[in-house]
Amino acid sequence: MSDYFKHSSAVVDEGARIGLDTKIWHFSHISSGANIGNNVSIGQNVYIGDKAIIGDHCKIQNNVSVYDNVFLEEYVFCGPSVVFTNVNNPRAHIQRKHEYRDTLVKYGATLGANATIVCGITIGEYAFIGAGAVVTQDAKPYALLVGVPARQIGWMSEAGERLALPLSGDAEIICTQTGDLYKLNGDHLTKSVTNK
Figure 1 (cartoon, rainbow, N blue to C red):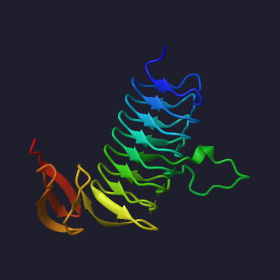
Figure 2: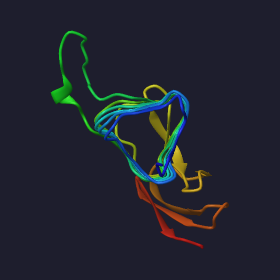
Figure 3: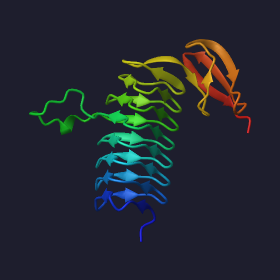
Figure 4: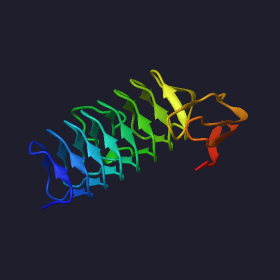
């Protein structure tokens, strides 16, 4: 008996490492080298590659493929049909597996439905990528990015609330949901006080 749930239609290849209380739903495929943490929710028709790492408490919604060299830290949310890549210049007739580029999505980040994350970049802690965005460059911690190609239009709190701050300068604001204080210094946002 395993310590995780797998729907009868899902395929988990021998050798895959799957954490406690993880749930794998209909028609998903977990490759043999995949490393999946505890309490992860893997929706319908999800693929996890051999060299993918999924941190604890991530939520991966339907129709997402997490290919080799994609790494999700803890508490990452991937909306339905998020797209990851791992080769910058693919051609069907050229093998480029030795050219895979690492993609890192850091703690607490949100990737909206149908967002595309081009390989070789880092999405910062608690960044929020809007639905349908095409991200081609690194996203700063707490940054809100939208559009094609994605561009930063604001900042988000850890609670997922948009913060009324300029893109750069010196300012501070309190998140109305949590009471946490956020400070903007230049073009970097940090949470300086936790009101818990």
